[in-house]
Length: 146
Image (cartoon, rainbow, N blue to C red; front, side, top):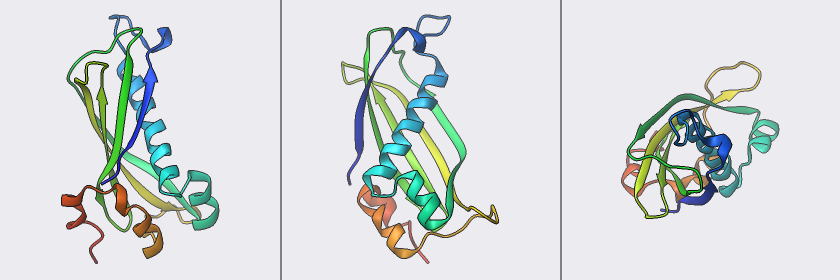
C-alpha cells in the first residue's frame, strides 16, 4: 500500500493561546493531504468536478491528539485510505514530530456527491480502481465489494 507523505513547518500563525499547534491547523493539514491524495491517484478535485460531475464532500472528521507540536517543529504527515466504497471513502492521517513520535491520528470520511442532484453517487469502476494502490491491504478485502 502506498501512502502520500509530506512535511509542513510549524509557523507562528499555527500556534494557539496555549503555545502549541492549534487543533484547527491539523484539519487544514488534513485538507492539504486529501488534495494531495486525490492528485496522486490522478484525480485532482477540479477533474472530479469537471469530468465526473461529482463533488468530493467531507461528512466527518475525527482527530485524536497524542502529543503537542510547537513553533519551529517540522511535522511529517501520512495519508492513505482505510475504506473505499462506491460512494464513500475513509482517509487515515498520521502526524509525526521530528523524533518520529505520533502527535495526532485522524480520519476523514468523504462522499462523492452528484454536482446537479446533490445526492451520493457511485464512482465508476475505472475511478474506483485508481484508488486501489493507496488502500490498506486489509481494508481492500472489505472495500469495493458489490
